[in-house]
Length: 138
Image (cartoon, helix red, strand yellow):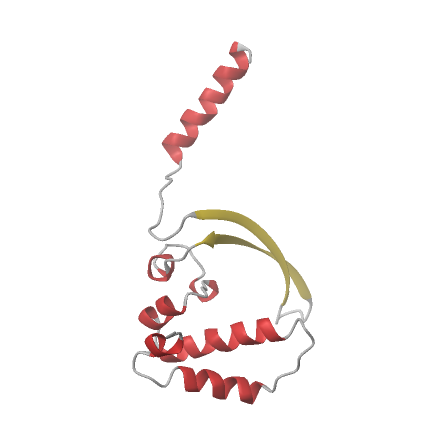
């Protein structure tokens, strides 16, 4: 590595250290940035626009702290950690997560399970006051 390259990289590193705040979040071990395109209807014109969403996918979760991050689209924050969903958002949110996970697992095989049956299963699993202690008790 030449001196010019080293000084250029050192300058970029110094700039980033001064202007970007990096910190961790308890419960998150790895993170990766991803982008996804989606089509959105524009009510004024009736046309579809392409929007790009930037998504951070993580190993581990910390739902409460993730919802508190400024400038985050809180409606898009999700986790499949049922204990955190129960503690932070409550029973109905946990039912929705269970329903989504069941549908995701059953659909790729071509199995068609009636949504009402899945809803009954999710409702049954969350009708206890502390459902997770009885759900996976072995």
